[in-house]
Length: 213
Image (tube, rainbow, N blue to C red; front, side, top):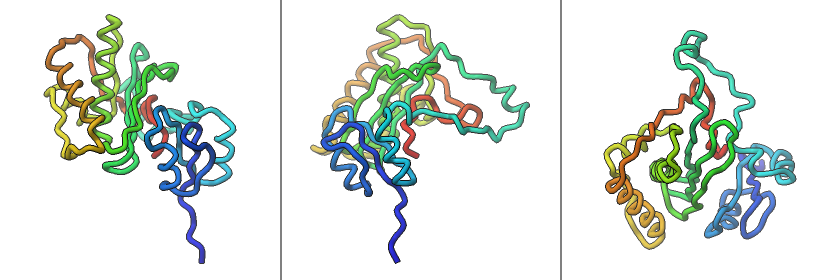
């Protein structure tokens, strides 16, 4: 009996583009490719159809989201503040290939993206995304708030640390160089930006989500 495929991977930008039937094949196309664009799909047909479209049409979408919270709970939480940017990270493995990005919360227009990094973790990506967002908002003297769905990243930023258990090595040196720069920025800058936890249960996935869950 043949083993059923769990996922198919569409690569819009990489060393080679197309639909790949294993994570290892997909990984080979995005490794060391700056700005790689890829996403998993449950069927080959869905992955093939996506390849004909645009990467950004398939990430950060909440079209089918239905909150399980009560009307009173939703009323208490309210709606997102769209005068904001949202950040998120995605890691294929822990550690694994990681990237992070920031988008306009309302339009989902991508404001920045970094990666993929060969060896990282989701927590490191969430932390770097927050600091990147803080730096951009300060540079532009913006009053927008900053959304993240990671309490861990919020804690690390507040404490001005990156409390990861990932060990430094030659493979992840570029990533840790960014971490060092982020910590240095936090220690040498003040900011007025308010960092807010994105209410996933009420609003669905954060707009910056990479859609690879």
